Amino acid sequence: MIKVAIIEDNEFMRDGWKTILDFDPDIVVTNTYQSCEDAFSAKDFGNNDLILLDIELPGMHGTEGVKVIREQYPHLLVLMVTIHDENEKIFKALRNGAVGYLLKKVSPKELTEAVKNAVDGGSPMSPNIARKVITSFQNKEDDAVTLSEKETEVLSALSDGLSYKAVAEKVFLSVDGVRYHIRNIYQKLEARNRAEAVAKGIRYNLISNPGNS
Amino acid sequence: MIKVAIIEDNEFMRDGWKTILDFDPDIVVTNTYQSCEDAFSAKDFGNNDLILLDIELPGMHGTEGVKVIREQYPHLLVLMVTIHDENEKIFKALRNGAVGYLLKKVSPKELTEAVKNAVDGGSPMSPNIARKVITSFQNKEDDAVTLSEKETEVLSALSDGLSYKAVAEKVFLSVDGVRYHIRNIYQKLEARNRAEAVAKGIRYNLISNPGNS
DNA sequence: CTTAGTACTGCCTGTTCAGGTAGTTTAATT
DNA sequence: AATTAAACTACCTGAACAGGCAGTACTAAG
Picture 1 (cartoon, rainbow over the protein chains, first blue to last red):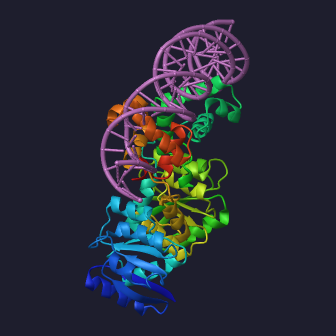
Picture 2: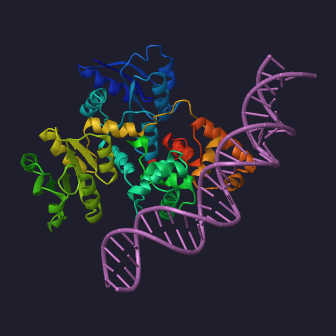
């Protein structure tokens, strides 16, 4: 039995979702709240499995709410269900820990499936949201700039804070050999120093970003 | 009518997918290929709407294949369908331009729906793939490490390749004032130099990463 | 065979950086 | 009124870095 709480300021939405979800034999809506503040003051709030959360709320904004929930109740899954599909809000909510993002026009069937999907370790998303997420992954500035294997190695070592000497030992080159590659890297990335090169390297996805794999 | 081509080295998989997709009245499989090289030499290859692409292929790897397809035939949608769910391959394929990523265990219904979904502007993904993608978005090490506003400003300036002097002018401080903050940043991030600090700053989402928003 | 390009190695020079230590100002605490 | 901490400013030193220039070895192309 999946225990769900709903945080949504619009009464009709709230009741509609509750009705839909309660209709499913595997799901029970334990409570509904009008705002994040309301929800956090309820002492049994943590006693759920999943929260349906609206973005545009009076008081604490949904994108902030996710953050608080993830910190205070790390076991709760948060599913955003909103009318907004603006990039900024989507990404903020996801960065802050939401597991999925649905648009309010979801059908009843999609809604219950999304809840089950989330509990099963999935990340339900409306198709166009998914596309936005994927698009944001793709190399935007993939124009021309590619580093050779050695350059990538060197840049990666630099991002770990190694000195030229340390890099040289790591990649089995002379210090000047390392410098040779670094010069080329600077030229390719139009960078003036290690810091800028590393920043661009990470941003252009040229060196692995542990955050991304 | 959605025109689909399949690139997959396993004969049974290839025929299975073709049968499934051809069964749907809205989809037609125009051709199947054993490798990327095969596909690219076919002159009518560009005359499709969507490509189902395996990752592990003889010759050109699927993750590279996506890249070539996106460059040579920008109008083609590429849907990865593979047995691999390793983070690295998923992200590489998506970064290189795939619109979706399915695991081979998809049901026939899911497969046909995914194809239609992709053509409709969606990004079909197996639930656990979706979760991985979403997880990669989230602030991983958001614990403890926070920078003050000024520190963020300084670090951000460093990531743009500015020298201490240039940073000082930008944030209206003395060079030593900048150094004061940088020392604190190094301590907080456990970094030894600008490069490492910038790398960690971006990876911990402490400074804006244009690539992610 | 010559030429050109790539991948280094080596050195020299001035600049920038990192660490250490110390002093000042301001604001909050006691 | 005294104490403490945060946010600077200042200076000194040696190490690290960036740019310029030169040379070598190897490979591919004309």
